[in-house]
Length: 573
Image (cartoon, rainbow, N blue to C red; front, side, top):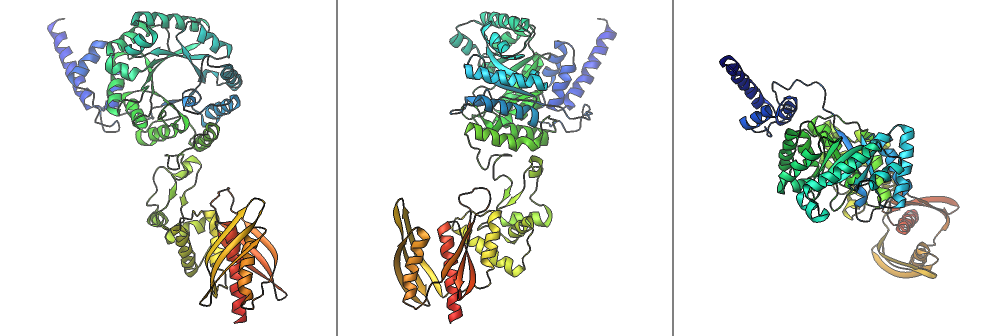
């Protein structure tokens, strides 16, 4: 190299070095991939470390991309998710979940089983592959296999599959102590199995099991393994944090190193949630340049589970500006399906899919939303085919009630709203669970035009049993005087009527005949829902209807009866 060439090279290095330092961490990874030759990449890394602190949206010379980067999701609910304690999907359940994942939610890839587990598992995979082939999804269906030459490959081929994910050992400790093999022997075994799989027409991906520990404890082994198998036709190299031990900083550094050392290889990231860091680790991996993430519905998986598909999808889109294939409106549907089939119930406060995550409880929040959407974020429930709910209870305010009245299409005067709100707070204070479906019952009960207090129930104990008469013991206050009585009958309400009739007889009050008895319960099957009881009485030749509302069906009837008694006492006063 002459002096002019040397000067030109030095100038070029200075220009590239300045450009390098101006980039964010993600842009640096992309730039490295575009650089030809390991010497250039090594020079850049030695001149300045990867800029992890700066976000990709910051201004830089390389920030000229106009389209969002696309991230693929591989859902492994049917394989890794089924390793959750107590979860075993039936064959038909697996087929339905697979169809929903690919056809409804539109994930990019699914992993549906481990090879050679059982005949039932094989039948399920055959059915999934048959449907997938018919619908054009067969290349998106993958099965975990083992480095066992022909056995796993033949199993996948017999099920009609096209993709096998080989489970190789990503740490020297696992290779040595679990397989009893050296690195060279393991590489030889992998090459043999991959060659046979490709002869059978399969696409081959490889898991580096326990890669996170392997990278930390035996990095030379990991690099040696990849160098030995990088040129044998493997499509994706899957890097699992098998025991969920890594932090986001560790994930970013390790992934950046892997991508830099092996820029021609495609890497997936397979996180676990043992430290509660799965979603954060996904963000770090994507920031480092990883383009495929493994996850499960409802965070299913061994121990603390895998990364939640719902959390990953929303975080990548909202917080990192990434593009994904999935239909967000179907996330809730898939969550409920997997919840029912697995028997593992989702926490009410689980992000995105929990029952309560779009519920505002505090009255001040409802007030802020009513006045200007002050507590609304990008996580709008409509994105996920859900609705915002304003809880009714002791923390409710006027805005909480107003929002729910609007939902029901009801209008109340300010005076009546105050009465209804007072009842709601009282019910909430006694730990009653109140839903919007209960509201019409509460309104009707509170706004009953004739409400008097000649007779007040102080205590009521009702006992019912199988093949025995029900009994009731009551204590009431009638116009300042206390009375106690007991009664029996065919059911709790009949026993109450017997007991209260005995008291009223002493005051020359004759109980009217009961003509009709209606019970109304809100839709949804909530066992704690309020019950409305409407009783029709024969009152001096005319019909009198009274209403009672309580979460206990018998007590709702008791309240309706007390209202009737008070109305008649008022008429006789």
